[in-house]
Length: 347
Image 1 (cartoon, helix red, strand yellow):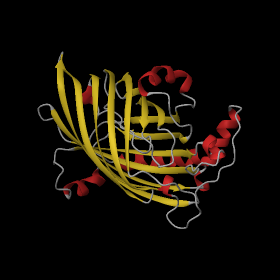
Image 2 (image 1 turned 90 degrees about the vertical axis):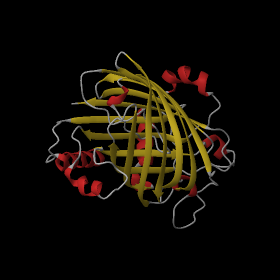
Image 3 (image 1 turned 30 degrees about the vertical axis):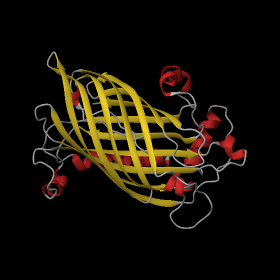
């Protein structure tokens, strides 16, 4: 209950912060996102669809589950960002700025079968965080567009995140057992990430841009995650210019397409890949200070492959992403496969 009350307070503060902006559109988008390991709650529905293409040989555990609740106002170009915008020389004066606020929680877990056999596995870790995300989209030029995204995350890793309590509650409600965690210690988290993307609209029919190729590069710095990344997505659908590209889950399964309100049928299917050079991963390296042995030797180079679909009306959408992730640490037996579904309601 405290978590829900805190979220409502945060969302209320965000709405108030944008309330004085003079750029017109009212309302916003509320998005709920849930992610789960391949053998979790989504498995009976989506495994038959995705396993034939992505393979069945995946680990049990690791990013066990996640949820995220976000609010994205339709209003653009908030006044508080204008002085910052003026001092970022590589952004055009015509770039449209949108913001999004979210509360999110994650549970990282070992493969308990391997751990019980005495093999080295990643530690348990709960993570609770608040994030502000800022999207900066240039006007469409011919058939290309620049899109930049800045995200700032503050949170807590460890018992205070409530990850273990949420895990046990969900298992009790579904009649499953849950072992006690041997998790990372409490540690506050501060992370900043930035990525730059270029979208190229390659095919046009019936006055609609139907095929999009979007390469991007980005980086994250913080005590939770420090890495550099490059990737690309290919998307086929309708009304693609009404958002900022397909969802691109990174090390955490959170994303936002900043879809625009309106009366139109939105649908698309997408395929993407991302490679990362990882310098720091708190969930594998263990706590920043102290050495309690709760860590594994992470891999420096990691890559993801994702496929999914989206359908909806205007900015109200239902999205499913299947993510295949390369081994993240040296003693990991198999890659991970994760599923994410998000529900967005525009008002």
